[in-house]
Image 1 (tube, rainbow, N blue to C red):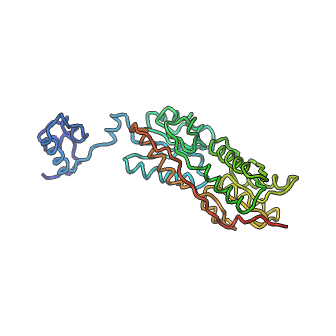
Image 2 (image 1 turned 30 degrees about the vertical axis):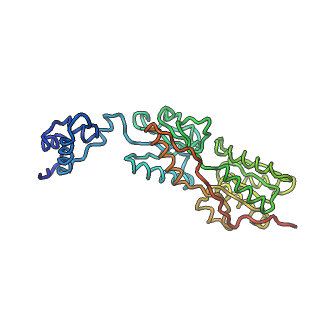
Length: 338
């Protein structure tokens, strides 16, 4: 059969195969069994191949009420971590014929404007970071199939949650410092009302409390280098013994702590050890390079998309936490003995 110079239609396929357009729709929609014969189905498929026919998926999806589009809601893109989450989610989505729209909350954390006239009409589902959960109210995303990232599995808005094993990450950091001999620790905690940071605080406190003779104090800081610099300076110039290690909730806070320590004339790690969490590119740009916990952002995004696909298909998503790994570098050492 000669191929048409214009894009073939289902009517062309029907004429070539000698069947009705309804039969073509059944066969190419894989709903023909029990309704047309296998011989007819094969004739339709052969005609479609010969003509180079491709169904109009956009029109078909609109008729079915699906756009095969997913919204990924994250805080403002101030680090590469959420870019990695997007990369992983988009890769899995593409393998299943979906597209991913990235929506970074304009204010970083908190309410956000609706990026669509009606999210429910434009989207099949939402993947959202708990750090940007307030944005869901604006886009009415909590009324769509929803997967939450870094969220309480027992109290999440979503149909499923996907979490990194942050508790184990904090355990690895704490055990590393305790093994080195540190007993007086400052926790530079992210001043963000989010489940994932609550987990870090509770896990660190529990691990320290389980070791006799330890002392843990906490300083809160916004997730910014300047905020961390100010909080660290205030904590280290307060009366009382100076901590021998600082545990930071993320690598950006650690960078601010580095600046504060340098301005106070303290050496890393000779006078004070510092740890982060994320393993951003920043971690190896610091001097000395930062001991931190590596979080696989792309795998996080992949697992989030797989969970949403399972929800859309009515399947049970994988609920196992994603493993994390301590990366020991030059910012930690045994405490200095005067």
